[in-house]
Image 1 (tube, one colour):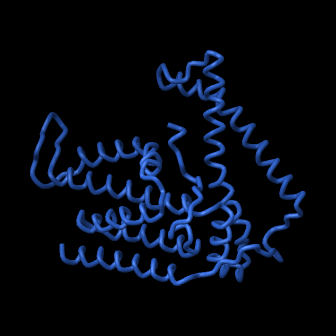
Image 2 (cartoon, one colour):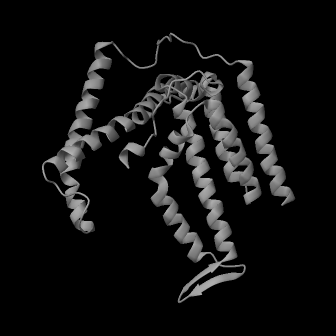
Length: 267
């Protein structure tokens, strides 16, 4: 399961999505999230699904990788399904057993929420799949630059966000190695009750925290050795520039958002 978590990973490529300005990709991601939450019915959500089906091949990210990234949210999907299926009332009653009742509205709501969660995770993951951490830091800093006027440490915030995102795959890999080492020593992690499993996590969490602090100290030392002093006076090797393809992508996203609003009105 840990190997299936792909949040924060970057896959180099030469697709149109890779070449988009990172600032525009952040804006497009925000618009896509707004699109999903604007949809009030399955028809509107279908527009968001179509948009995602188009973008994934264009980004040249393998569908297998996108589906692999959805595996960690399976418990969330199951939990959402149970809540909506058995606790949403209204409509025609399809199954009635004891205190549990499955209605047509419950099934519609369940399908709607599952599709929305899947689209939300898959769509937002494309941002990190197609954008390097350094570029993402610059984009976040540029977008938040107006906040510098009120003394907000924009560069430091952007740096912390990106480092945290970048270290997710590293910590996952470290956790997997520690678990494999503990199992090789005879540790039983996967069997037993809830309390036993919780106690079995202690030999994993302690080395993981030690490793995380050690990596953070090494990173801080490396930045200090390179005379890093924050964003003031800092220059960039690559300047962010918008191109016609960025505005075309923005217009296309707005068209899909308009379609969702139109579908909401018609249905």
